[in-house]
Length: 201
Image 1 (tube, helix red, strand yellow):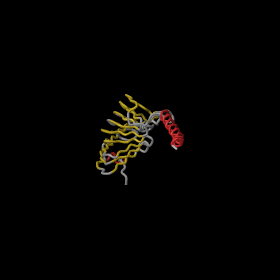
Image 2 (cartoon, one colour):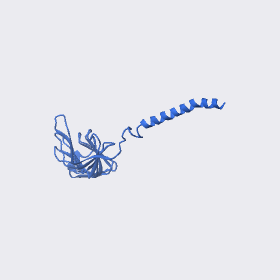
Image 3 (tube, helix red, strand yellow):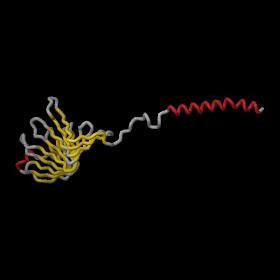
Image 4 (spheres, helix red, strand yellow):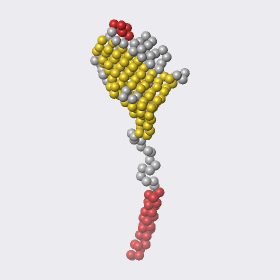
């Protein structure tokens, strides 16, 4: 009777041993945890540049935009870059050069959106029938593809002898139309009334 029980347990023990060895071999051949998994990108710098400059050309090969900065730090996760002393200039035939600057800024991966912060300023040179224009704010967002500069922060605008303040601004460099939003105040000089900034109705 005991011999029968012992004999019947032998296959069970052998199968258990075989399963254990198989499991051990499988674990031995598996890569360590996280090895082979996709590298998760984190918001850390992956390269730097000093005296950074990039230009966008039009179809004729002429410079349409130029973005410069004294220092640039690029991040691998979102491909955004931090900029020190950024300046972006727009060059269009038959129109005054427009320059937007800030103490610091950011630019996205395809350079279509440039944010300017701290002492942000827009300067449009005089010419082609327009007086010089200057706008100051804490923040300007340059939409490069649309040729638009906007801000949701308080802004001070000087256009020739006229001075105005507002809660926000949108400037279209194609149409040269300036829109002021919110609490708009100021004085428009008589000589500048024909080209005064447009306020949304």
